[in-house]
Image (cartoon, rainbow, N blue to C red; front, side):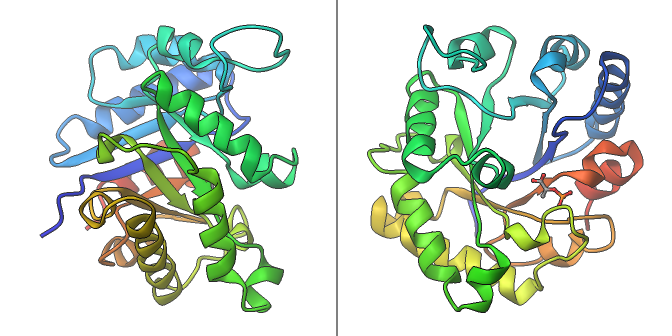
Length: 252
Ligand code: PEP
């Protein structure tokens, strides 16, 4: 029996005007109204956080940022602090998304600072890890994931396992329409949990949620969510369409 509450998370990336964001957020609120035993999170772009927070009101939908700085304030042009995000109503932040790693060159050491800074201010990280196609084909998947987890979470002390979320997102499956097979996904998730058990305690590792991300859609969500170590999904493209996201959060 798992103690992990399913989390379905939508990453809107660099999409949505204010009007589009309000409309989509309203649809997610309506979709989530009668959802039992599952959490739903959305991560709009920074510019829409305030407007979306208003739409979410006191609904059960959780608000997240797509990135966060480690510092409270200061000379960090272009960055947003955990305090600023909390001010806007965010309780979570995606950290280390593959686009941050591969387009913007963010490495494990930098991401570790983001994770520690967020946790210090009680902002829950959704910490993303994942191998490239070359790494998978070169048989390096598990060692890459292990390095990302150990380095990204160095120095982390887990007091509330529900407040730290890992997202396994194979880089080759993000936005490509290719999904890891359920066996590949379950194998990676189970492996990551053994690394977490080694880093923290086993009973903490069994309570940390590990989401799968990479072209999750209404057609593949049911089978992915049927896997023992898959505790939710981080959804990109399909989270931008109210109908698709509705079907995903209501996976069977
Ligand atoms: C993502 O943005 O984290 C993601 C998994 O995107 P997509 O679902 O479009 O592959």
